[in-house]
Amino acid sequence: MAFCNMCGAQIADGTTTCAACAGRIPAAPAAPAAAPAGGMADNVAGLLAYITIIPAIIFLVMEPYNRNRFVRFHAWQNIFLHVAAIVMWIALMILTVAASVIPIVGHLIVMLLGLVVWVGFFVIWIVLLIKANQGQMYKLPFIGDLAEKQANAM
Image 1 (cartoon, rainbow, N blue to C red):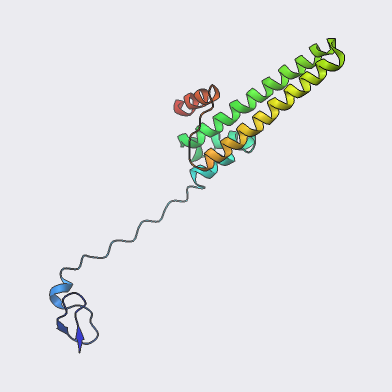
Image 2: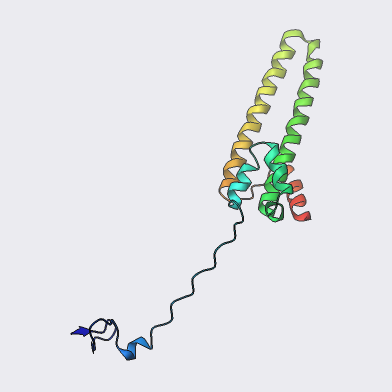
């Protein structure tokens, strides 16, 4: 002799609910539709956009990433960060030539300045990698505004 799981009424063997309770049980939800194969998660694509300038350019031209504002923002910010690094490198080369007027002290100052600049760029790059992986759109002061404008342009 079996009993209903919901109300405790006596039911036939092999069943779990009585006829009255079976009518009150909601239908099982439909199976969720399979997610489309859209590639990697946004935070992973944002992180990979900072690895070098090549993935950033690839994400700007490749579907579905070129339609994703988050990925476009990080790709553009990485490109502008690389452009800023090149400009700083050129400025340091010009300072190196100008420092030849003061033979030893001038070169030491430029070398120390260069070391500070490159360590600063490395720290900023690590912070951007971490923030992109956390799903945040962390904006650098000037570069971030340019990247946001470019990401919203599409």
